[in-house]
Amino acid sequence: MMELQHQRLMALAGQLQLESLISAAPALSQQAVDQEWSYMDFMEHLLHEEKLARHQRKQAMYTRMAPSRR
Image (tube, rainbow, N blue to C red; front, side):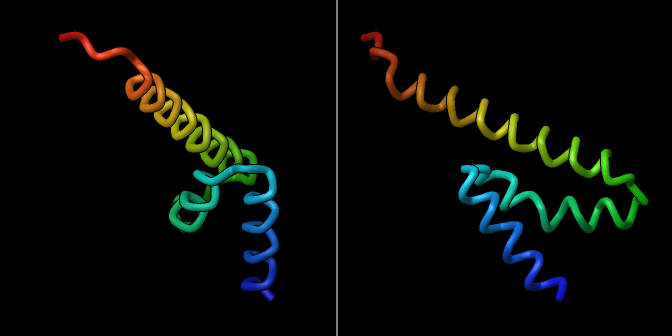
């Protein structure tokens, strides 16, 4: 049952274009269990990871698009 739920959650995350959430979820869910996080703590960490990854992707894109200085 948990595997089916995991698959559904990952499919939804993909549809919402939350790619970093997909990759971060397994490790963060284990950390949440180990450290007894509340659901809200878990969600905050997941969304924070997504935000950081999006920022890093944006920075990388801007760096690639920037004219080279020679």
